[in-house]
Amino acid sequence: MTQGTSQEPDPHGKQVPQHIAVIMDGNGRWAKRRGLPRYAGHPVGVEAVRRIVEACVERGISVLTLFAFSSENWRRPQKEVSLIMDLFIRSLKKEARRLHRNGVKLRVIGDRKAFSDTLQRQIHEVESLTEGNTGLTLQVAANYGGQWDIVQAARRLAQRVHEGDLLPEQISESLFDETLSFPDLPNPDLFIRTGGEKRISNFLLWQCAYTELYFTDILWPDFDSAALDAALADFSNRQRRFGRTGDQVRDQAEAS
Image (cartoon, rainbow, N blue to C red; front, side, top):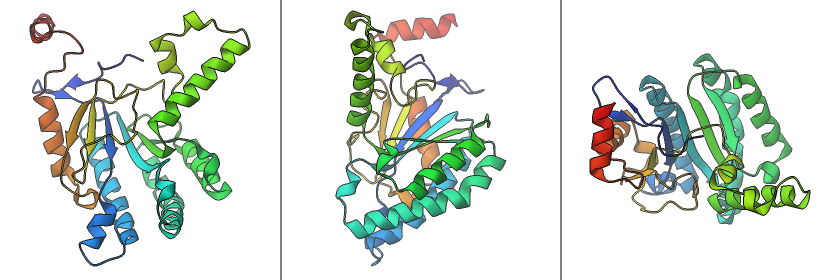
């Protein structure tokens, strides 16, 4: 995988992100502002997911990674966690055929061991159903944390060293990258966080090293295609240097 070079120009010369990562923040606050219990915002958030998946397909985005449930979210009230897990199962069942019809490949990244057998089975079924699809790759990060991802990669490499299959000095950035959760996909070009917070909250820590960050006050249930287009427009106006000077980037663009 080539890091940080995956954006592609559209016919009008603007750079378009190939991979978008999203922290879908604000479901609970959306509900509370309407006098509803926090959980009431999550089903509406699922509707926003459907809108944004469709918008990404229409705009030619290759990969969309959504932070659905972090490894820290287990600290939330038990009732809310249970309702989220139930919603996750029901959403997978409901959306599986729709995703498949539209050529979307679904993946779930994260530590699945904490999930119920029912949820693990449902994830496997949807992944198997959509595995051969060649349209948008939709990655759902569930029980995922960037630190967990780095640690599990380190453990795998340490095991290889222990078994004599790898020397410590052979561990490189590229090899480490290949041991993370999605080595066959480009790292995110654009990171979007809704809900007004301005932090990445342990999401794709390694993979977002050169990702462009975009923060919006819009709560996730209200995030729509127009809000996505605003993020894409902002991205298209940025110069991505990856350690080079602005002049070098311009010279390379002119040469190509």
